[in-house]
Length: 86
Image (cartoon, rainbow, N blue to C red; front, side, top):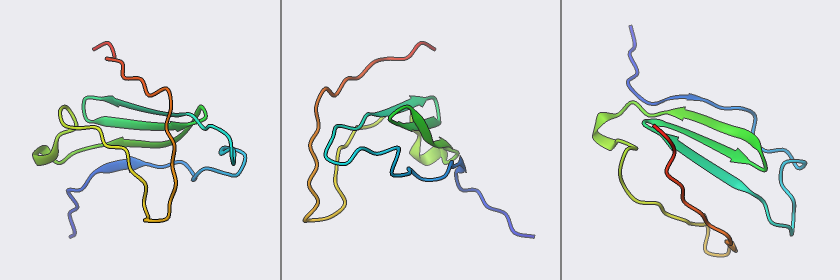
């Protein structure tokens, strides 16, 4: 018997070319409520994740913005944070 104690996640298929707009602004919404994290790209849910590792809770911490390569370019605008109702 194999047990896995990692995170539980439901992924929708990755973004399609229709979901992203090249050379235009795209909208990401990242919603964290308790240990559940949802990611929306231009209004389409692309990830729904429930964190289960008590040593790395999502209920507190930092927000980081990054790219994934030395030659990647990214620009950000209108970053807003809002506390969600309990």
